[in-house]
Length: 67
Image (cartoon, rainbow, N blue to C red; front, side):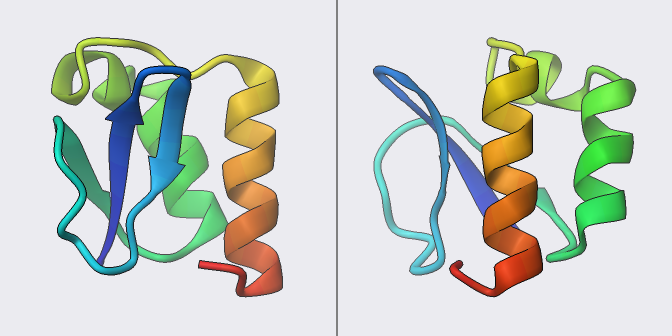
């Protein structure tokens, strides 16, 4: 499972799962991340939504293995 954490400037991956702040857990799979965003899961869990640019950046991180 991959933790996505809300930061002051948006959201970021948290591979160590120790960053402070609200977090949401998803499978480390780009399709799962997209499905969670489409279902507004991040808006509920993080109390902030992901913009298209931010979602694209997170998907790129997952697909390139940069997490």
